[in-house]
Image (cartoon, rainbow over all chains, first blue to last red; front, side):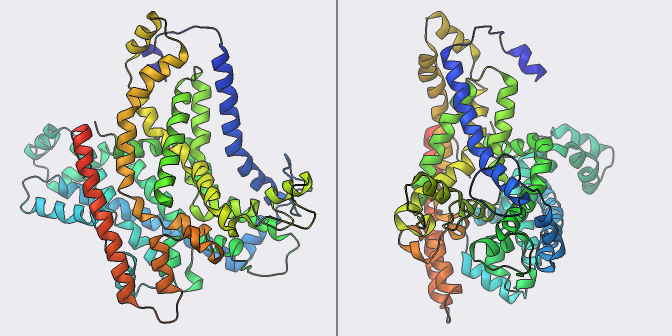
Length: 288
Length: 230
């Protein structure tokens, strides 16, 4: 911010009609995004569902959320979501940093072949059914480990990590090598500490992908006990599969509470981590 | 088709939004707006589909049908079942995509816009250009390259549409919503005796077309900006 202020020439003009219209347009855009979310939030606290848009809940109740916590068939998917996201992010970071580090070992024999091998999977995929058959023969069908393993290995993120590592000055590696540092020592003592920003960005990308994943569950997790929260939520709302019928709140309240629970973790984290999310997009796209 | 139209629409709205966002003078307002418009991107398709299906639901708690009823557009006990009507499904799919992805799409355009040399605007000021002229003759040409890049990058992915369609479609609107991945899914997992050979072949054909698209896009990318995407 401070830097921008110095660079930008101070343009002090009075508010023109253009500015006013611009502000109004953006207020409308912002409202278009906020209103649906606000309605969901308010409805999740309302005891009875109504179609009207309310600014504030009428008879606020936390029953919707309590039902999620108390009903085992909703709590378990939520816990599975949490566990798979944590494990998957960890595995993803481990593999993408190690993979990226291997790819910058330019004197390693076979490095090019390995790189092309990895890149080929980005361009050409076997498709849904061969993937499914592989998972089936690995015995992973129905287990929530599918979520961790399928997302943990992500070639695109390996390439992103490699691009980031390439930006570290080569003289640092050289200096460490002269000081007698082993390749793994360089990795842990130099590469990783210098890549904190990239680790945060890519880690968040992994976490969001795994938390939000729906299709992997739909295709591979055949055991209804092992589905994640996103899957359970959609099943509940769109396929009308409600876990129990004895509630003292309306269905709509429960649905809306479910939606809020599904987006809550990232909505809380997001304002603090926005810069890392945004950086993740830019390291991928604008390399210039 | 669905995928290409979606791509064009969301890119177009992203460009418009980022141009006007760039015209914002108040930096705090700009930051706050960016925070808000990026938000929907972090919701999964399952969540977005759930939100919109609750809003569009034909029951007594559906927002849109409720409003239509109270305005007298539809009768007291009537409703429009938006997501199960062929005529409505595609427009709604596009609207939901715009709602979810426009904000996120602006990131890359804003990055380009912040790189425009301010001298260009000053020169335009001296020549007496109006706000509109400055946008049209300075901002838009500066973005042209990025727009092409984004379109090319995303063109390579048009065959991969699955989740967003899958969570929103249903058997009533198959004629307007089916894409190749959902077709493969249904042929394999929604039938009693799946023919893995046939669906694998369909999937491989899709992969092949996608692969050709990537290579063509890479070529195009090299032609327009001097370097490839892979």
